[in-house]
Every structure is written in C-alpha cells, then in structure tokens.
Amino acid sequence: MKRHFAPTAKSIAWMPFLIGLLCLWSSLASAEKPAKAAVASAHYLATEAGHEVLANGGNAFDAAIAVSAALAVVEPASSGLGGGAFWLLHRAADDHQVMIDGRETAPAAAHRDMYLNENGEVNRDLAVNGPLAAGIPGHAAGMVHLAQNYGRLPLSESLKPAIRLATEGFPVDEKYHSLMSFRAETIRRWPAATEALLVDGENPPVGHIIKLPDIANTLRLIAEQGFEGFYKGETADKLVKGVQEAGGIWTHADLAGYTIKEREPIRTSYQGYELVTAPPPSSGGVAIAEILNIVEPYKISDLDPVKRIHVLAEAMRRAYRDRSIYLGDPDFFDVPVRLLTSRDYAAGLRASIRLDRATDSNSLAGFEDSPKGTDTTHFSLIDTDGNMVAATLTVNLPYGAAFMAPGTGFLLNNEMDDFSAKAGAPNAYGLLGYSANAIEPHKRMLSSMTPTFVLGEEKVAVLGTPGGSRIITMVLLGLLDFIDGNGPVSWVSLPRIHHQYQPDQISAEPDALTADQIAALEALGHTVNVRERTWGNMHGVMWNRQTGEVEGGSDPRWPSGRAIVK
Ligand code: GLY
Image (cartoon, rainbow, N blue to C red; front, side, top):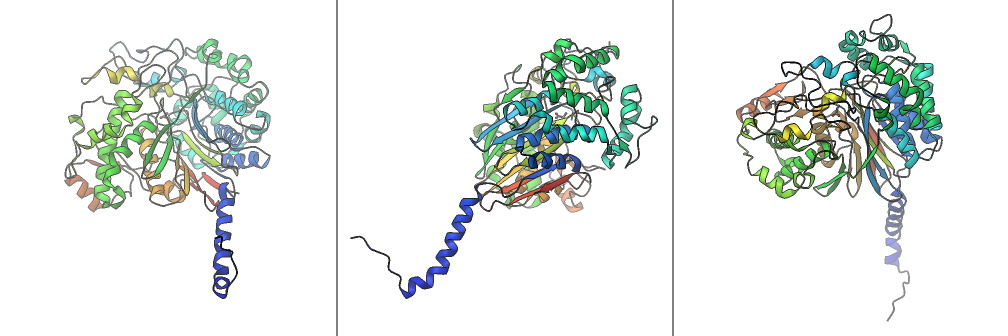
C-alpha cells in the first residue's frame, strides 16, 4: 500500500535539516561549471591578456592564444614566435582532451652529425647559438590551429592584446634583466637582436620600456592570413633570408611544410585520480606515469620525508633512464608507450628498489643523457564553461639561439639542442639511446615539457612549468601535493628535489632539505647536490567541481608571474 507523507511534529522538526540538504544538493548541481575563470602565467601582462579576451566573449582556447601571444612579446627569454609549444586542451562540451603539438621540427637539410667537428666532438656553439641551432617554429601554427578548431573569436581579437603590448611597449622585469645578463654577449653577435632587445648594446635596466613593432607586424599578418601570415610570404621571406645569410639552413619549403599534430594524451591513474598529460614527442607524460606506477604501492604520503624522497628518487632514476633510451618523436621512432606506462613494467622496476640503499645508476643499463633546456614558460587556465588549457611554450635556453632575422622582431629557438647531441657516437650501453632522438630531417626533438591535468572526483588541477629536464619532476611533485589535498599556491611554492639517472645525484633547491635529511639520504648511498639557485616557474589553477570555486597559484620564484581569478 502506498504511504502518503503527512507532516507530524517530528517531521516538522527535521524540516530545516531537509531544507539544508536540498540547498546543498542544489548548490552541488549548480556547481558543474566554475564560478569564475582563472588564468595563471609567468607574466601579469599575459595573464591580463587572457582575461581581456575572456571578457570579450572568448573561451579558454581564445584566451590560450592571447596568453601565448602576449608571453611571446613580454617574455622573450622563454618563448616566442620563433619557438614551439604544447597546448593540452580539455573541451567541456564533449570532454574532448587532446594535446596540440606545436613542437619545432628539424629543417630538411639537418643531419645526424651536423654539430660534430672534425674530431667527432659536438660544437656546442653551433648547437646552441645562431640560426643553425633553430628548429622550424610551431608557436604561430599552434595559435592558428587553436583559433580555427577550438576558439570562438577571430585571431584579430585574440591577438589584439599582444599586438598592443608589442606596439606600446612593456617594462623590462627582473627575469628579462637577470637572464639577459647571461645572454647579452651572444645577442650582440646579431644586429637585429641587439637593436630589438638591448639598449645601446647593453642589458636594459628593470623598468625600461621595450617596444617590438616588428613582432606587432608579424602578429597582424598572422591575424589577417592565418598560417600563411607566418609560414609563407613576407614573414617567411625575412626568416629564410636572415637565417641563410647568417649561416643557417632553413628554406621556404621547411616553413611552408610545417604541420601541427593533434596527439592523444597519456592517460594514467593514481590513487583514484585520473591524469591526462603530455605524450611523445614529450617525454614528460610517459615518465610521470612510470614514476607514479612505481611509487603507488609505497603509499608515499605516509612515509617519513627521507624515505619518501628516497623512493621518489629511485623511481625518477629509472624513468629518466628509460627516457634516454626509448623516447623520441613517435612519427620517427616506435616509442613503447604502452609498455613503459604499464603497471606490470613498473612492478619489475620496483623489484630492484631497496628501501635501505640507493641504486647505483651505472648498475642500470642505459644511455647517458645530459639535461637539456633551462628556460621555457607555462600557463594554466580555465574558463567558466569548464574548458581548460595547460600550455608549455619554449625557445629552449634563455633567449633561445640569441639570433633574430632582420625585420621580424622575435628570436629563434635553439631547440635543435634537444636532439641527442652525440647522435653519431653510440655509447657503451646501446644503440637505442642514440636512434630514438637522433637528428633527422623534419623530426621533432624530444621534449620534457609536461602540461598536465589531474582529475579527481571533487577537484581538478591544471599545471605545468618550465625548467628543462627538471620539468617532469617538478610537475610530479606538484601533482602529488595536489593529491595530498593542497591548492595551487602550495604546488607552485614547494621546495624541489630532482633525480635524472645521470648524473647520479639528488639535486635539491637551496632550502629544500634539512642538514639531517641530507645526512640521512647520504647514509642511504645518495649523493646530494644542493644547488645555489632555485628552478622552475610553475603556474597552476584548481577547480572544485562541487563548490564551483576556482583558485590559481603563480610561482613565487619570479615576481612577474600572476594568477588572477575573476
Ligand atoms: N626545451 C625544453 C623542452 O622542450 O624540454
């Protein structure tokens, strides 16, 4: 028999509680979208550019174009139209996740031994300075691809803030000045770069206004003509002429033939969280999946700090060893992604870890890989529809190759140095290490850039950072901090430690470890190298899917970074 609800004194007493529950339910139901948008980037002017485009009706992907273009103007040390990028996207309407691969490619005339001198040694100057060090840029093609396939606005709108910044100028900040003090001497070799980025041939002081009208012109051409505005016509003519006159090997066909790749992200899970992260030609997603699979059974959040660092370092050691052997451009080399990211494979690696002793890296068969790249930039953003972008952009070393083709206003990358520099000299341990990431025409060089989403039942994290080979371990530490329940201000501020197989040592930021912790790690057999400088420049955002609340965090290591929620 059906029972009808009739109010009694007891049920009336429960009413406020039931109404409370109803309110909570409706607030959960209405919190399927973020209450506000959040943009976190390495420069406040780029963060503001993202919000400007959102306020003008753009979605997260339009905002990503605006931030990418603005960073290319105001942070020339780290990224730019002469460089490349990975944009990891989440489109809320259909839960589509993809990585837009705008990595640079080797020019057609590139070859395996192009940086070796007559003695078979790498000529470091050629590999990192000047036009021969530069791959064919993907940054501009990536922005065009985003606009054509994911954005709502025309490029004329999403590029507007960057064009304004390049035209009206921006103040030199601490990062510009500090990194320029290392690169000014090399910049001075090339007149166009000297004219654009130095003042009377000297490093400009903090606060000096830099205007880059040639970049503004290039951005206008991209806005008007899309891909052709950069890869053909006026810009391509200036690039090819400038590069060839300075000894480089680019051709019009290299530029016209550049293609963006849409890549299926690496997906893995850890303690109930889903990770969506960068696939090859990044090594980051594979390495992070491998590390998490190795450490998961240790329940590292419950370990004391020394044991936790030991276990993490042992997992990092093994993942970086595999990075050096198996990772390269998947269009040229059959990267065994399924194997490397499988839990069975991780179990095998875990079996060789001892809790009471560090492994000697030399006891693991491998290939010595030197750390690559020290600069680059990252931004994270989310719009009020729940679309998300994590993007890491690069010219490789600070100020890239330090070379600028006359009339363009932007520096070229030195990403060719992310290929295996000793491609022609197979090492003692095996051929695989050399072929996976050897230089070949049109190939993409291996990257460590790791834009990442971490999706929990309640909270979602969007994060990434620059920092060369340390990117992977920084993202790892950041996402573990998120899974431990902390917000983006915590992830980006965390002290950092790193192990990359070779050199066989735990690197630590100046205040990351106490004297007792260093002694305990050394007693386990680790070499601990406390560095003089901090590293990285992480920018992340977090969305609580149940409350709708959004937070952002910008790395305190460099003061120009900014996370703005509005
Ligand atoms: N150039 C830095 C990286 O791609 O890893």
